[in-house]
Length: 290
Image (cartoon, rainbow, N blue to C red; front, top):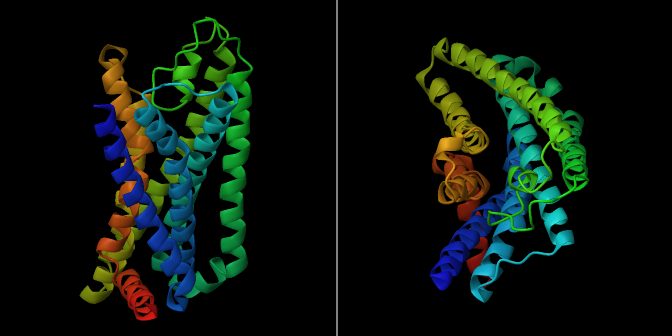
């Protein structure tokens, strides 16, 4: 069973590496994709690569060697990196909704609103927000006294599972931080929803069917990625205690930490002709070299 787990995780990890690696290479090498939308998609792919590389390699090693050990410093590093990459990814998804709003609702001002400096600033702000948010959570979580043992009931160091090990009453500070975080993340969610309401209103008013199709083909993949990310993460953190069996907790955490990074490249490349063309040219170039 441990070997089966190892091969399953390895297959998922290689699929995520291949998908996100291909998108990153295509966007970086193909000049037609040097636009704000693909710049943010490159950021998303890099964050997905980091996110899945934070959890799966250690889980694969544990499955292969039939152990569940992780060092204290390894657990701190894993928690910091996971929270940083996930929160930065959410910021990037929020920025991408603004990019789509500017492209469809403000086409005449798009070049000014989303020039290279604005894109670089927004991307840097997303990564910096992730670092600060993660520092805050990680420092707070690991400053709590742990008196409920040292067994994390999860395949990676997840904050809710670590808080279960802390002394009762000592996690109120972290709870306050979670409430603050939830309000910020809910604000981002409202921003995404409002952006898409404006986008769909503008798209439905378009006289040209081709224009509507092009607008939908760039928006629907992003909407699918946001929905997948939010639904899995929300279900994981708001699950009912009565449904919190260890196996369900494990499955739900797997859904939000592993499935989005693996499926995002597939979702973005299915309906995107420009990306498909760039990948085709990349393959032709690579095979022609051999």
